Length: 263
Image (cartoon, rainbow, N blue to C red):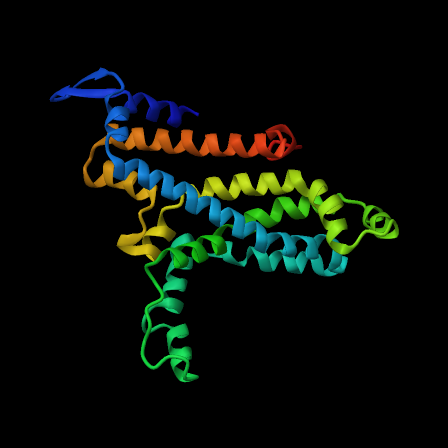
């Protein structure tokens, strides 16, 4: 908590002279008056929501299979396979995607070899690549809370739903999803916050076209050495993502006490 409070304090400083500061909201006003900054923040939020949605689409079937379908003895092995992306750093994972997707990469070479394309094709430095890289990075953090929640669901609930004439879709919609909602919300919160705060993956896979808000923060702190603006951007990112999480909790009727804060 102390680092965040320190960042808030720095964001409220206004430079009035060499090593002379006063407190005010000038840094926040400057942010609002510069469209590229808040446009980048909104773009990052939208992309993070998209990554969260795709991670849920990918992670839910995997979590359901591990928790309810896979034999008990193989559940641990399947869970370990999901942990593979975490065995290396974000940097190594990003460069792994670069090896696959660059113009002279494995995918481009394979497509040429089978005759689908005639020449090299560059698959890097676009939004789709960034989304794929981020989903691959964060999907585990969607799977873990879902598996934990689904493990607690009694199979008799599913059997009762089918015995009462419910189709697979109906049982899934009326029984599985409501029961798994705390895990869904917990996974979405974790994935969204991690994605919005990601730096290496968007920069390396998106290149100059990434337009990720964390790049703006880095630029203010390191390139321009403007700690006041960098701190302001950091506070605004935290506030905005917290607002999105709060809104998601309200829309789903969940509470932090029953999701990420659940014992």
